Length: 95
Image 1 (cartoon, rainbow, N blue to C red):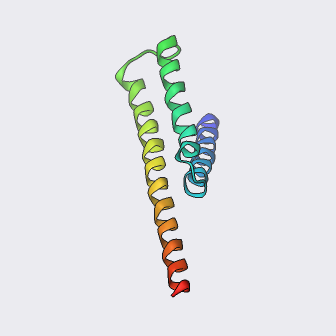
Image 2: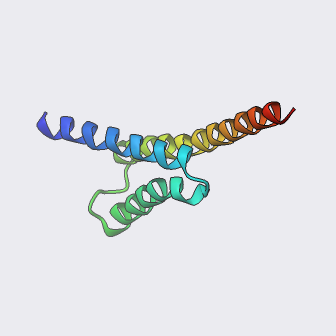
């Protein structure tokens, strides 16, 4: 039970860090660091044989990777919207 709580805390911290990297920094690569590391870790875990490649073990990793890559994409969309809104405010001030 304690490990599960620690896992959720770590996941929450990673989600917050990824959100900040995706929405605050100009380069999309900064927001992609965490999802790419998670994907590489997933591949390494299954290829090294630490966890057997079975459906019941594979499904949580698929969900995890999907969530992080989806969050990366939505964070970049939000970054673009923020920049467009800022540009519109600057144009309105110039007129």
